[in-house]
Image 1 (spheres, each protein chain N blue to C red):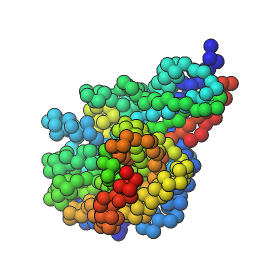
Image 2 (spheres, helix red, strand yellow; image 1 turned 90 degrees about the horizontal axis):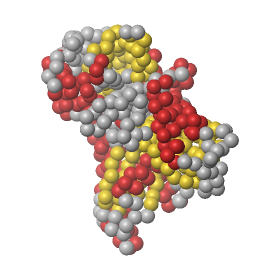
Image 3 (cartoon, rainbow over the protein chains, first blue to last red; image 1 turned 90 degrees about the vertical axis):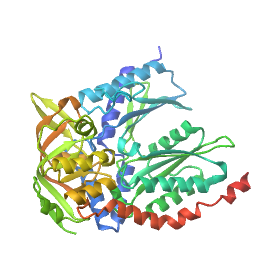
Image 4 (cartoon, each protein chain N blue to C red; image 1 turned 135 degrees about the vertical axis):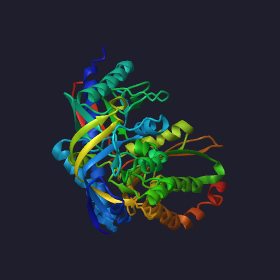
Length: 293
Length: 204
C-alpha cells in the first residue's frame, strides 16, 4: 500500500484541465498588460486590449478563454520521498481527462490520425500525452497540465543543423520560423526553443520551455542572454499581435538545452499562443492539493 | 481607418468600400464552417444545405451543449484560416460568400479571388473566445451534425468583433504587408547570421 489516493489524482487531473482553460497564469496576464501599455501601434494596442477584455469576460462569466480545448498534456513529476504505482497514475489521469471533457462538457478535439474519426472524451491512443519524471527531496507528486491549442502547435519546427552552422545558424533558424509563422499561432506567442539532444529530445525541450513562467530566465546566464537577444530580434520584426502589425510579436523566448552528439546541431521551435494556458498542482500524501500554474 | 457595422447578406458594393485596416463588426446571421465542412462540400461534392449568397462565414468549431433539440454555445472561438485556404476561392465563386472571419489570414489564391469576386477577410482576435461567445445570441440551426463539431452552424450574432479588414477586395493583404515589412527589417540581421560561425569553429 503506497498510501496514495488515485481518485484524488484523477479529480486533480480533471480540475487541472478545466482550470487551464479558464484561469490564465498571472505571469502571462502581467506580460499582456505590459505589452498593451508599451504598444505604440494603435491597431495592435486595440487587439491587446481585446485580449485583456476577453480575460475579464471569461472570469466574470465563468467561460473558457478560448474554444480550443487542445491536446491534453500532463507532465508528472514524482517526488523521491513518495512511492506510487505509475500505471495507476496513468489511468487516473486518463480518467480525469475524460471526466473533464464529458462532465463540463468540453469539446473533444482528439481524432484518429488515419481515419480522422473523432473521439468524444479527449482521449485516444497515447492521448492524453503523459510524461513522467522525478523530483529529488520532494514529498509530493507534481502534475503540470497544458491543453495545447492547435493554432500554435501547428507552428512547430525541427531542424537538424550542421555543427558548422553554430549558434548563428540556430538564431537564424528561430527567426525564420517566426517570420514564416506571421499571424498564425496567435501572437504574441511564448516561443519555446530546444537546442541539442536527439531529434525527439530537442522537440521535448522546446515544449518544456513553454511550460516555464513568462519572465523567468534560464538559470544559465549565457542561455538567458540568448533568450533576451532572440526576444528583441523577434519583436523587431513588427509582426505584432495576430500578425496585423505592432511591437509585440512574442511575450517571451524560453530556451532549454541538452548535450548532443558532436556531429549534431539540432534546434526545435514550439510556440504557445498569447494565452499561455497551463496549470499545475502538487498532491501530498495526506491528501492536500496545492493548485498553481 | 474607419469603423463599419455590417448586416449580412452583403452586397458587392458594401464589400468594395472596405479597405485593409478598417474596423468592422457584424450583426445578424453568420455561418460557422471548418475543415470537415469544406472537405464535404468541395472534395466530396455535397451541396451545402443553406444558401450562402452574400453570407459571412466564420472559421469555427464551437464547444456547445445540446438541450432537447437545441444547441447552446459554451465557447465559440475562431480557428486558423490557412488550413482552409484552398477551398476559399470556390466558396466565393460558386456560392457567393462575401466575407470570411478567421485568424492568421489566407494565401494568394484567396486574395485574388476576393479581388475578382468581391470578398473580404475579417481578422478576429484569435483566442478571445469568451468575448466572442457573449456576442453570439443564438445557434439557430445546425446542419451536418454527423461532422460534429465541424458542422455548418447558423449563428445569430450581435456586434461580432472587433474585426480588422485584413484582406480587401482590391488586392490588399495586411498580413502580407506586415510580413514583407518584417523581412525587410530583419534582412540585415538574417544576413549577418547567414555566414559561417567563426566562433563555433574555434570551439571545434
